[in-house]
Image 1 (tube, rainbow, N blue to C red):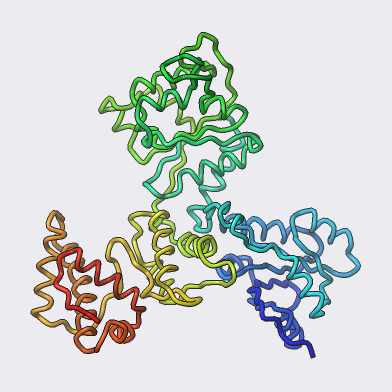
Image 2: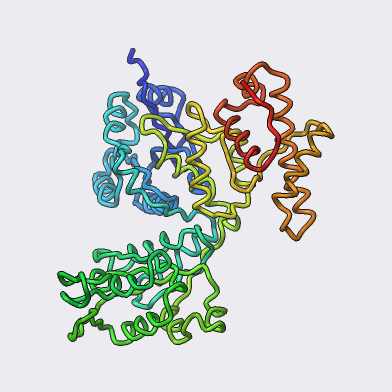
Length: 470
């Protein structure tokens, strides 16, 4: 008897013809396959957060493979797909490989050795692969609609304006527009207009000739030249100085640039994608942005919703961040309660804040599970403790909590914020008072000692009196 392998591959198993039998399931498990059966494409989409592999059975053509590949791409990272086909259908097997299946097996082959060899061929994560992974996640229906619209816009040559709140993923969408366009083999060049001093942006965008100014020892190709044949992405375009907006408008109209200190015009073949988190109409009224430039860059506008308005993206994004930043040699997952908290939180910092929360959880967590106590939210929207609070302790926390939110305008929000802080503060103080040291207090609270230290430090920073702990 062959012993089960120590390596486990969670795999979504979709077979429109028949469910896997008990004997076959046992053989697959011995080969290292952790079976996650699904019945529909919707089930498969929901299960992608847990899977490292998708196994599907093709019944006559590759349409199912095409649908699955589309789902895995919208999820945000390439989940390898293994296809099972009838032994006699060689043409279908060849077509499946051509369409992107990493392996094709006979539908009736459940040999342990065959599956072990096949799983060994499955693409593995490496540090380099993790670095190159992009947060291309479009699982929520609103996001899928945006993705489909972006793909249609990408096939044209019109300039596009991406609008949305800070941290929502505007550059990600810009890269989708580039990758889905006929220019995908050309360069993608990005510049954040708010990140550089005014005197450097012009040189970066348009370049300079040798001797154009003191220190110009050689010619420099600007970003527009570097993006020739591809796409240039100007993030936070509302922050571009007004006089440079005039020059940018001229470049977009003439499709030519002249380097600083130069006399010769250089032809350009670039597509502009701009992004902003500001209301450009309001900026135009305040004479901070040129109206004619606005109409030039916004031939088509794409709006990204805040993360709280696309709930379906939260768990796939969080899972992808676990994959990107977690250990290579093991799979880290969220507990059901942690998933519930992630989906309930309002995410004022959008995708960027979600990434921060997941990275903190990986630091604070122990083992292969991320629990609710490992989640440190920036806006104090954490769990409440149902136990009654001591009046004196609550009054102390109410005092510093009111100082912290004294500039708020809604008294109901102030009370809710204070109640949440008071509840957690009370629970921590009670645990410290009833135990001998910090380790015992953390154990009583159901969190790690590191999490307890973090929480205590946060309360101290906000002026709450904290009892010393061993």
